[in-house]
Amino acid sequence: MGGLIGLDWGTTSLRAYWLDEAGAIREVRARPWGVRQLPEGGFDAALADITRDWPALPRLASGMVGSRQGWLEVPYIDLPADLQMLARNVRRLHASDGGDVHVVPGLRNPQGPDVMRGEEIQLFGALARQPALAAHSTWILPGTHSKWASVCDGAVVDFSTLMTGELFALLRQHSILGIGTSDATLDEDAFVRGVIVARDSCAAGAFSRLFSARALVLDGALGNSAVPGYLSGLLIGEEFRCRLATERFSLGAPIQLIGDDALCARYRLAAAHFDIELAESVTDAAAHGLWQIAGQIGLIQAASIRTAKEIPSC
Amino acid sequence: MGGLIGLDWGTTSLRAYWLDEAGAIREVRARPWGVRQLPEGGFDAALADITRDWPALPRLASGMVGSRQGWLEVPYIDLPADLQMLARNVRRLHASDGGDVHVVPGLRNPQGPDVMRGEEIQLFGALARQPALAAHSTWILPGTHSKWASVCDGAVVDFSTLMTGELFALLRQHSILGIGTSDATLDEDAFVRGVIVARDSCAAGAFSRLFSARALVLDGALGNSAVPGYLSGLLIGEEFRCRLATERFSLGAPIQLIGDDALCARYRLAAAHFDIELAESVTDAAAHGLWQIAGQIGLIQAASIRTAKEIPSC
Image (tube, rainbow over all chains, first blue to last red):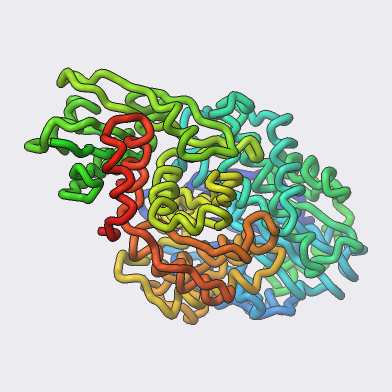
C-alpha cells in the first residue's frame, strides 16, 4: 500500500494527514500537542497516538518539530529557497517504534533576520495547486505569527513576520484592555471600526491608537463585548497598513491567503477596506506541501506525485 | 500646624507626601497598594497605614483613586483644562476615620478619545516649578501608559496615550520573546540597537520589527540577556518614531520629561537618537501639583501657596 503520513507539527498543535497513493487525503486528525505542550511520553507518544490504526507509511513532518525545541533540529535554509532546496535538506530521525520520521527544514530570511517553520510547506502546497502563481505572487499566512511572503520563479524570495495573533491574545488575556471583556463571537461592526482606525492612523500606526480600546469603553462609546472585535480589527488593520507603507510586498501580484477559515474571513474583510481583494484559500495546504516534498525525496512513487496535481482540493 | 497630606494613588502603587505649611516635603512614603491591589480593609486601611503618626492635615488625592474602580468616582474634565478647572471639580469623600479626603478629577481628550488620571497633577506640579513653560510646551510622562501632552497658555490642550510600558511587560512576561530572558540590568547597547531599529522602521513602524527580537536570538546575533534591553529600545524608540510621524506634538517647544529616574534616563537616551534634547525632570511633581490644587480650593493658606514657588525642588 502506497501513501504518506504528513505531520504539520507546530508550537501549540499537531495535525496528522493520511494521504493515499495518489496524494488525496483519506483522514485528518488534530491534537493540542504542539512541541511546547506534549503528552506524557513526548514526541513518540504523540506520534503513536495520532497515527493509531493507520498503516505503516513513510512519515514526513514540518513545523516547529524541526526547531531547537523540537524533536530533531533541522537548520534553516536561507532565502531564496524553492521546494527542491527544502527537499534536499530534509533530515531523518529514528522513532522509538522502529520507524523513521523525516523532518523538513524551515526558512531563514537574512534580511531582517526573520524565520519561519511550517508556513513554507503550506505555501509550496498551495503553489502546487495553483502553479500559475509560481512566477510572481504575494502570500499572507495569518496566525500567531503572521507571515507575508513573496514568491518569484517558484522560490520564496522574501518574507516577514508580524506578531498579530500573539499580540491579540496578550492584550485580550493580560492587558488592561481585556478587563471585563468576554470570549463571545467577534463583533463584526467593531472589527471594521478597528480596521478603519488602524488604516487612518497613517504613519503613526495603530499602536498609537491602542488605548482607544479603553477610552472608548470609559466613554460609553464601545461596549465591553465589542472590545475583542475592535482590537482584532486594529491589529489586523495595522498589518495591512504597515505592509502598504512600504513596497516590500507587491500588491500588483496576485495575493493569496492561507490559513484557518474564520481567520481568513477576517483578513478578507480587513483587506476590502484597503481596496485589496484576496483570492479563496487552498485548504489543507500543509498536506499538499508535504506530499510534494515526499515526492522529491523518493518517499513515494514519482508517478503518484504527478497525479496529485489533478486531484481536486479536499 | 499647617500643611497637607498629598496622595498620588495609581493602579498599582500609592505614594503619600507630608507637606509642611510652606509646601516643602517633610516625608514621603510608598506602598504597592494601587486601586487594583489594596490591603485588607481597602482604601481606609491603606490610608490609615500610610499616614500613621502623621498629623491630622487636609488630605488631597489624585490618580486612579478617582476612577470608577477607585474610592470615589470624580468625572473627567474635558480639554482644554487648566489648574483652576481641575480645582473647581475636586470632590470630597468621608473616610472611616471621620476625616475627609478630597479627590482630583482626571482629564479627557475628546479627540481620540483619550483619558488620564494622575499625570495631569504631575504636569501642573512641574509647571508650577517652571512657570516659563506655561506659554507653550510639550510634555512626556513615561510609564505603563505613557502620555505626551501639549500645554498652551497654562492649559493642557492635547494629550495622547501610548501603552509602551504595559506592552513591554506583556512581551517580557507572556510572549515568545521573553523565553529564556532574565530580569538582569537592562543592556544599554541592546537598548540603543532597538531604538535605532525602531527609528529606521519608517512608516511601517517598529511593530513590524518586533519578531526580530526572536530571530536575532536564533541567529546568535543577540544574547538572551540582551533581549529585554532590545525590546525596551524598540518600544521606546517606536514611541518617538510615532510621535515624530505626525506634527501633533510640537518639537519646537521645550520638551519636558516627568517620571521615574531610571525610566527618564532611558527616554533621554532614546531621544538623543532622534536629535531631541530633553530637559532635566522635576522630581516629586505630583506633590507640587497637589499643593497647587490645595491652595486653589482653600485647603491651605493662600500665603503659603505663593511661598511654595520659591522653594527649591526636593
